[in-house]
Length: 95
Image 1 (cartoon, one colour):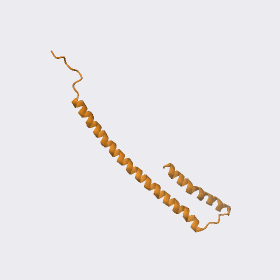
Image 2 (cartoon, rainbow, N blue to C red):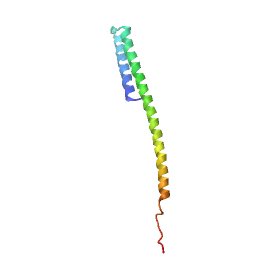
Image 3 (tube, one colour):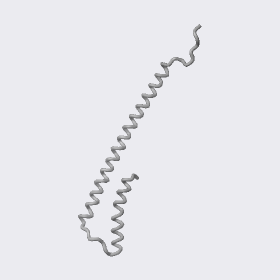
Image 4 (cartoon, one colour):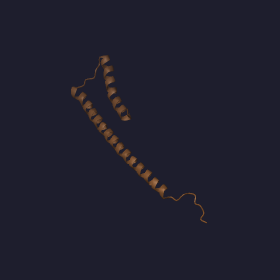
């Protein structure tokens, strides 16, 4: 669970626990149905936006991993060519 998910959950849990505590005292705050729905709708939109960001991030990570794999293959090919073009490390004297 990411930090942003935790913040969202705490943002939702806090008002709910306050409401439960106050209802136990018999002094529930006067709220309209409309005002209760707005934060939930707003929260839902934020959650969806965060989910989209996570999907975009995951897609970008996959792209970068594919590029990294391609670069590794290129590097291996280059290293093989370089080794093939090198003269032997020990050269025998010509007599």
